Length: 248
Image 1 (tube, rainbow, N blue to C red):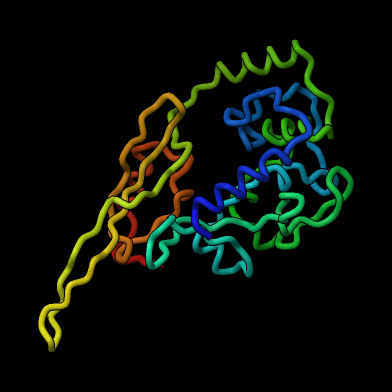
Image 2 (tube, rainbow, N blue to C red; image 1 turned 30 degrees about the vertical axis):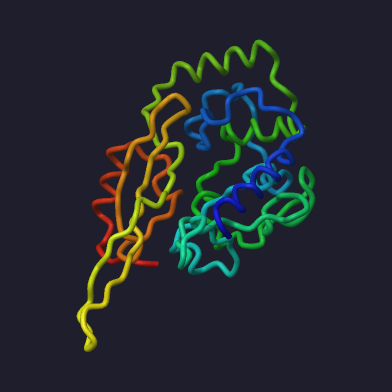
């Protein structure tokens, strides 16, 4: 699916993902139980099988190349207007009617189950029940009471006190140009154009994008989601470690 078409689908599904607007900024809420800062003390850890809010809310659930090797179904996203198509991401499929994960069964807030639980991606593994993000999702779906004004103020204060290193919020892969290489054949030199791509890292709405890496599509592959969550230095270290000619 071309990226433009995929983005349009996500925009159409996103408004279905909530009953209430979040009281706290989702981007600043940890998905880890051990990093809980905004949840009132004494709040119990909910049972996942009676919830399903996180599986319903997250419209974009990335799948790595290794994970997609063991999955039977995923959405493959390509750059717009490139021939042949250049794959830049893979995601879990969504139900076209509800927008929920296609692998989620049951009824939200009552009883749910994951049909690919053993093969689920790392992103799903990495989401802790009872984390700040978990409880905010549950409040948005009406599975938990809304925070009081005093609790919101206290939660925001606790979030402000947390040190936050600047990490990559989004990565965009764009066509940079082409490079022409010649190959000697019996008929003479045969020239072929190869697509050159560039990755840009985005850290926030007020920050300029940072150039991450320029590469030829026939020699390397990258998914846009691979470097999200890393610092700039960490991302560049990962790029340097990528084996040469590791193609899709």
